[in-house]
Image (cartoon, rainbow, N blue to C red; front, side, top):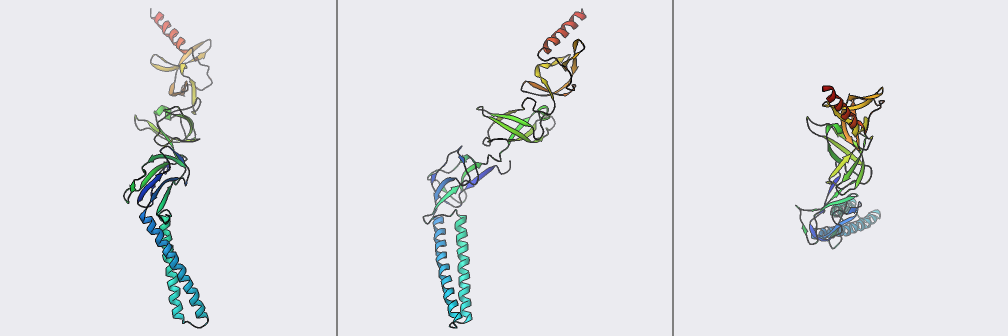
Length: 296
């Protein structure tokens, strides 16, 4: 999903003194990822401290001159000058403090901590102790916001037809971790291609880049399903054996995807029929045998 991956940069150049997390670590918003020491940060803090001292002195001077003016010992022009100087000092202080904040609020020693901007998983760690970060290379790490991550699958057209927004599916990682998800979008397949299915995990999502496979739960589609063994090919036609009277007759059907041992029937059955399930293959064999004997 857009915004699911966050690049974390140091706010200014400096030398990394410590790294506090590793790849794959789960972090919270505000977790310290790395610490660095920056001469520029120390200078910014010193400038802010000096601006604070100047602003305090300017406020004191304004208070003094205001008292003298009120008692008639100072002309208005002189008070106006002192007032302007105080306003200028306050403006310089605001600018200095804003610069310090933009630099991550370094201390007097120039130490800056880099924090995670969101809850998630560290998917990539670039910084290492002793590394020097400069203006063109400030990246520290990448964080995946698992709360916004989506699962993306390629699906054959027949399987995609079983899924609509809100359909549930089960995904599994290569190491066997099962993830339940809900379909949020289905992009139709191009001519002869595969459809793209996007789903949101109902629990914790895996890190971006995780390879997954997915299947629809039994009955998870909106169409009719039958046991997969009930579907047979009779004289080149996909069919299901339906009970008629005392026997069974092969009825042509159009099938969709197979999942969980069941096959989607897109057309050919209404759902009210009695069909042959596990015995369908035997019926097909008997049908073929009867045709062979009739041919003699």
